Image 1: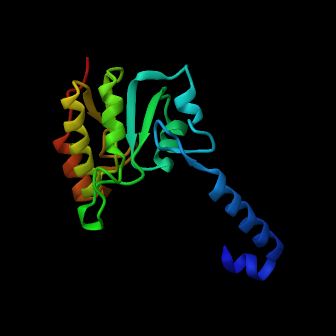
Image 2: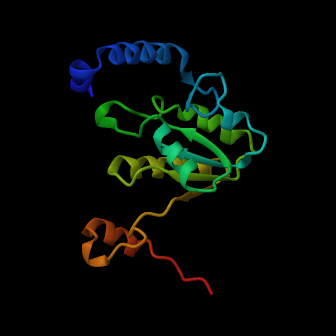
Image 3: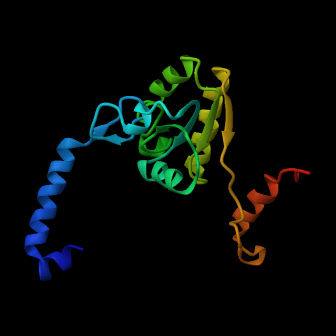
Length: 173
């Protein structure tokens, strides 16, 4: 993008730079869920149409957006802005887990939907979040991972296939 702007659209590059500067000043974090927001509370947290009994934890604002666009989920969110990674110095404090604990302690949330990525750090974060939920008598659940819809087993990598096989569930009637 930088080469394109330098070669063909320097005025557009200047405009983009100004707009990015304004965005960096105007956009902060929602006081409730930690997602990006121009206001103190984002529109999702401020909405009375959302189900406050469901709280979905995601690693990033992009993950939250993907869930919003692809599903009919109508609960609330908590955005970690990362995942536990002790080697990188990212612990519970950096992820705002004290705020998550405070939300769970309010007693309204009944289910904590853990939607972290299926990486080593994401799985460790999911395990930690499930422990926190159980301590507050909240049911933890984990989004499914495994074989993609329309995928063929012979083309699935071994780790994904192993996880999907180990996480199999009963077929309903």
